[in-house]
Length: 280
Image (cartoon, rainbow, N blue to C red; front, side, top):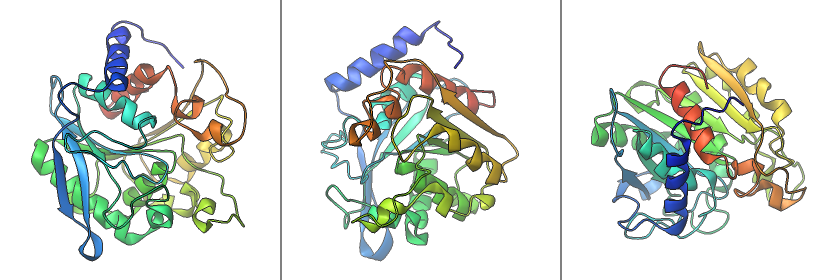
């Protein structure tokens, strides 16, 4: 991965601030109506400064997706997720952020479970995209999904159209290998269960070369881009960092190469360059 040091130390400071706990909250919580009479909440935060036309990022964490946002918009769960850690970095880079919690009927560790692949979930995310677009006045709204959140982001990107559709999608540490026959059926789901051919918007796929999570092998990332119909797309294998944590469940956690640990600022900066029309 190309390293552009410049102001990366300032972004690293934003990571430290997030991990220590923001003094003034993580952003006001917005609740919108979603499928079947449920509600879905997200924490909205404006950028530190907005160079050029404003852009908003809808952030979809991994795991079960249940952040259990508190009154200040800060997650009480999934604090180690890479997008939770990176939200303040994106704000420093000039983006509005919307950190999305699981719907009200899907709390707990399983959270979204198999719902991530459904049309209802895509429509829920479309409502959030439209709400964020209106709230931020952004010229563009992008979806970023990490780990299991990559399934949600890809599903929405493939299904949505019009004002509810995102203007681009970023998949990080995408789940590309399923475990058939697992005790929980949704563990078999991957981004390849999505009709990727329907994705026509700009697409960035980012993984770590040292990711040893069995579900997100970097060697499979090119298959996502090959199937997508995006006119502008890029696949990036990040290198460096502290290295592999070995195998097992720990390899699929946020504080591992799977979550770009100690490289959050560099990865966010690369994503920002792509979103703004350049190369990662």
